[in-house]
Length: 326
Ligand code: X1X
Image 1 (cartoon, rainbow, N blue to C red):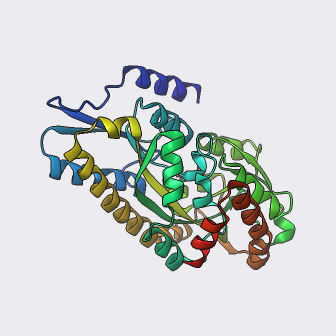
Image 2: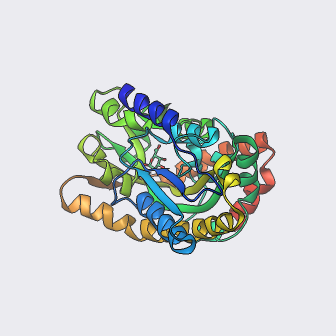
């Protein structure tokens, strides 16, 4: 891990920033995954669309497989305008710069895929995007995601009794820990690139994630029990550093905004359509055992007051009501 940090730091110091007006503009991205993951495919689609529209004067660099750290590193780079220019990010990994942004990926927000689609096809999340830009200088240019998050654990967790006190990793946003505490688990925020080791060494007993990432990073080796809590359908903004965006020529800014929307939509289609298939592939390969959760309604009941309190604290009660009404 220290090595990763060092590499990221070195990259940050030697990065070439995008320069408007010069013959060549280089845009740099980072992914936690290899080429098979929906996020990397989203980023590649963005490259393709921008390259096609803008021509030879633009080139792209992509750092794969978490080579530049995890999303908590990416968000710092984007906020500072160093090392990378764009990435697909979990809102809950951007909380440190914008406390309201994790509202869009808090557990139990979406009823189902139709609800999630309705929200992402509207502009209801715009106030949160504006806050992110204002507070972190990070611009949302599209939305990827579409994976369903479930529990993944070393031992099976299938009911409220087994969930009680379950030591699990959650993302860094306080709302994540609050909701998992409310449903009686014992959450702790741990960096994503430390999760595999933390489960292997017994520091935690599991975490929660979507099929694409469990498969891509082989988390099934340490957490082969998947419990279908279906507590989140991922919203994953495709974001660009404001510092990069403002340096781009105007015609390229317009191309970036259009390509961001289209690449995000393509990424959502890929991940949401592959989600069940990936779970099945891992089950067929004997890598995971999938169980239902006996009292999912109870989880929902325990979560709603926590969501309400968080929204009230942010002054975002109307926004939460609007999201729920979609
Ligand atoms: O839990 C995480 O930190 C990660 O889980 C998956 O790999 C993705 O959703 C990624 O965006 C990040 O949230």
